[in-house]
Length: 476
Image 1 (tube, rainbow, N blue to C red):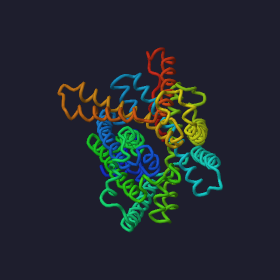
Image 2 (tube, rainbow, N blue to C red; image 1 turned 90 degrees about the horizontal axis):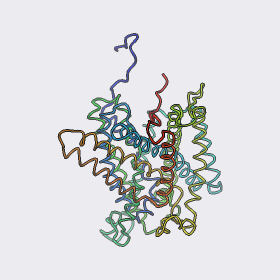
Image 3 (tube, helix red, strand yellow; image 1 turned 90 degrees about the vertical axis):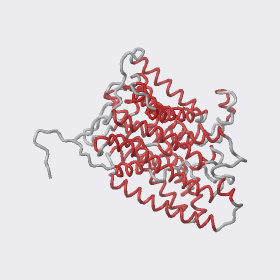
Image 4 (cartoon, rainbow, N blue to C red; image 1 turned 30 degrees about the vertical axis):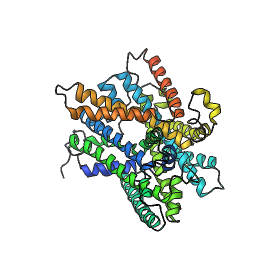
């Protein structure tokens, strides 16, 4: 085995093949991605869960092409705010980064909400509030210890989830064909039901379905370890979205045949566990536990990711450096930030469900004509998912715009292949963004206004860069 000569800096090895990258992407997104949000999609899209997942896949495929192409230009950066800041404008890059901060902070919140809801279903004698406090403390304690989930553990978890999904498919098929139904319409209704179809509702559901694909952009961070990255990063990003999209569509299609949307769910946030239990009673606990594990891993990772992003902002003095820019000497973890994010996640686990339950007549003064959308039909998990996608869709629009500028406007030869993907990706993401819930648009607009005002004040009208959003390098 060749060794690195003395005095030569160690470099990452290009060992990841195309299939390694696709497997990584599927593991990051998780093969059970649509199951946690199934009930929300059914409620928001009026039963057209399959359609919302497939439309979201189209939007993500165009955006994935833009991500893959931008990874060629910035093989080590791999960040939406870097692409926008470098290709379009530093101020717009900051706005994109600020929207991503909201994503990072909301992800652990919605994971705590979902796990606590599911734990309450398993043990109704323990209130939701107690579970929320418990999981927030566990997330924070483990992250302070610097606990990391290895790639092997992630792979094993993904394989276990795959086995559970396979069992669900078998049970669902036995249930569907073992019970009477009303002919061909029964099998097409999950795609299109003329009695409940509403284009605005379906687009609203699709704006939430984007959550199914969140994480595919992480493939771009492996550019320095991938074989032929200029080709494979793009292919892996697109193929990962395609694999997840098809798998997700089949999962929710089977679920809708087992439990038609016309029948209400006992709990909207944990609806899929009840669907699985109808297909085969033991699956209620098996699927529930599988989703708890999946959301537990996602929540822990999201909390540490948010803490590291805040550390990057603190060390560049965008946030108070004495608090946010400090790393624990023993654990090499930004402990203050972990505690800060943990406290925010716990607060959000109580605040979002409370806000979502406020009657529409109280919030009706915020907008006219949207009382129904602001009412009690929204759950805390749904509100959090909408807010998370508020920031994610802004980032996706930014990446599409950056790809358009770099590969179409700045190129001498104007190719249609460099024009259509980013333009279509941007337009579809904008359409989905506009169809987020009104409450999410209001809270998201407030968040963005605070960030823009802070950035303008800090830089005296964006005359200088506010912050380097790049994450700090890992210690050797």
